[in-house]
Image (cartoon, rainbow, N blue to C red):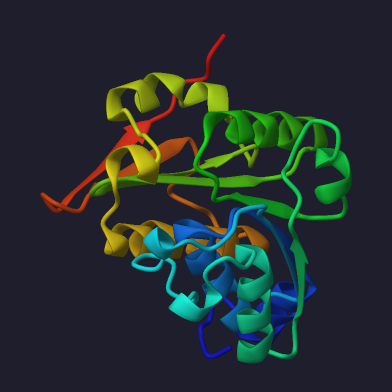
Amino acid sequence: MVLPEIGEAGQEKLKNAKILIVGAGGLGTVVATYLAVMGIGKLSIVDFDEIAETNLHRQFHYTPNDIGQKKVTVLAQKLRAQNNNIKVNASTEKITKDNIAILMENFSIVCDCTDNISARVLLDKHCDAEKIPLVHGAVSDWQGYVTLFHYKNKFRYSDLIEVEALLRAQTCQDNGISSPICGIIGSIMANETIKIILNTNSTLEGKLLYIDGLKNVFKTFNLKKSM
């Protein structure tokens, strides 16, 4: 509350916020952790996947003893222990066109921490229809990017396709991943989410921040609305 941009009034906004995080992997664990310690009043995390040994290097809340358990169940338990003043819900469902409306009901912001195109498209369409800001991030090998959709200027995921084709972002299974890249991108996603709650202007509005951790390159691309 010492931060002038937050203060007591801002902390109250964080307390009253309701955030949906889709994905409890390398990005989701980072986003959820920072939002929890910042005092977001209600977090709901959706992920159907189970913890595997290959997840442990980048999904820091999970241990070898957790292998085989649902990611979202373990993550929710860790977050409740970290901040018992907030509400954390866990859903092991896979988001589909049939259940997305129910899973996203009553949330003010969605954080897209998924790693597949179909889920991203589905989230984008529903956030567009319901006018819900979507904080979107992706990682691959040493690279990652962050942007905002359906916020003040109403950019959409389809406006990113041309840039994404240049980046050729793939899944972690395809390309591997450097653990700190998840931390960097996830931290920026959490920071953007907090700024939206506080109604603070974002320099990512209409832009995409791209990071190459191997070369220490930070670039900003302008998004162009598709016809």
